[in-house]
View 1 (cartoon, rainbow, N blue to C red):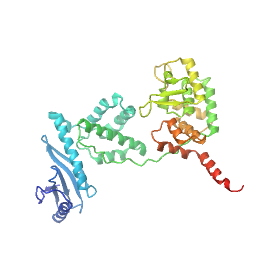
View 2 (cartoon, rainbow, N blue to C red):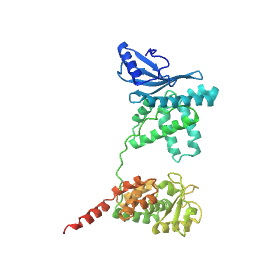
View 3 (cartoon, helix red, strand yellow):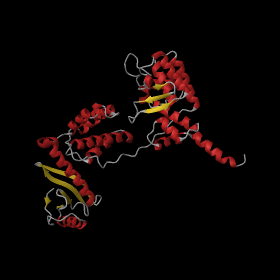
View 4 (cartoon, rainbow, N blue to C red):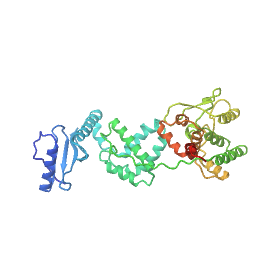
Length: 396
């Protein structure tokens, strides 16, 4: 689309009246009109006859011989002050990047998303900075590289990211994880000087529907535990069964429990130290007597050092026993509860026993009380007790 120079004075700042005049002129003359902002060199607005009363903020500027074009947003959804702030950040970042990379600046501007993802994988994920590094690498190779890898990062738009997320045949929560990864990649890229802004900056996460938090009732838990005990005495999956029983008795996460070591058990205080936690911080957790008995049994045949739940014929901890959990539920004649639902069961039992929400939060290792409060809705017995207690004022 051909652009025509503005009739406004070159030293005139963008104002509502200037934009209104540009929109009126575009509509009257049937062509797009571009107006520049004298307050910030490089910030411009394009009025089109196709969108009366609206216009598009852009950044157009030459930096180190490279002509930069960036679409910022629409007016009036984006105010002039907001557009100036965003444009100023973009221009500053571009100029700093050019200064930092010198002769290599043009090469960096031509970098494609494929190369950026590989650099992020090598310099961030492969160094183990993030606990979810393996999952993120899987997303990159399975989804991002095939779909977005060939695009130049300088040309990537919000529409590209939205289209990518829309095409994923995944649950909203999983798509939000993809969005978080893309935002993390671009945040790192900006910090490294590979780009000036993120096309995912203004994309909001999708609403997530919280799934029902199932928990075993007392009968189901007893049946499940009986099968565990029986199999543990005759099955080769001794360590995996011990791990599952320990999870049921502590409500801990699978990942942090698999990496528990015998040296991390305070045998005199019945407290364990978790090092492989979700947020990377050490966490000390007291365990119940039944769980401590199980730890003691593991110590008796393993010694004082090494994994509490070691893998078979390997130096690694026992593998995740998800299939074993499914077989246990089938043998117990109960629905197929997942390992994480054992955690829900533990939390529900705590609440039904009268534990306050802060105690539950600390034992489960939640970062906020908001997460823990979700478990309050998983305990109908708690509500029945409260209702019955309140209705005792009426005669029987």
